[in-house]
Amino acid sequence: MGFSFMLLLSNILLTAWLSTAKGEEKTCSPPYIPNGVYAPHRIIHRTDDEIRYECKYGFYPTNGSTVSKCTLTGWIPVPRCTCKLHLRL
Image (spheres, rainbow, N blue to C red):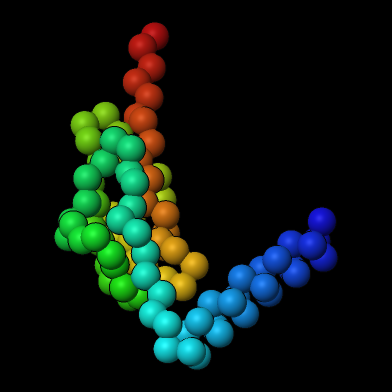
C-alpha cells in the first residue's frame, strides 16, 4: 500500500505541476459544506483564493478553522461542520 500511495501522490503532484507549467490555471469549484455557509460566493475560485465559513447552529468547524484556501490539490483545510453532541444525564 505504501508504494502505491506514493506513486499516486507523485502522479497527482506531477500533473498539477505540469498544468501550472503549461500556463493552465488551477481552480476550485465552490465548496459543498453541509450545515455551513461561506463567502465570497463565486462560480470558480482561483488558486490562493480564500473563503470564510461558519457552521449552522448546533454545528462547529471540524478542524477549528473557519478559513479555507484553494490550492493545487483542492480546499485546504477542507471546510467541514460537525454536529455538537449534547449529552443529558
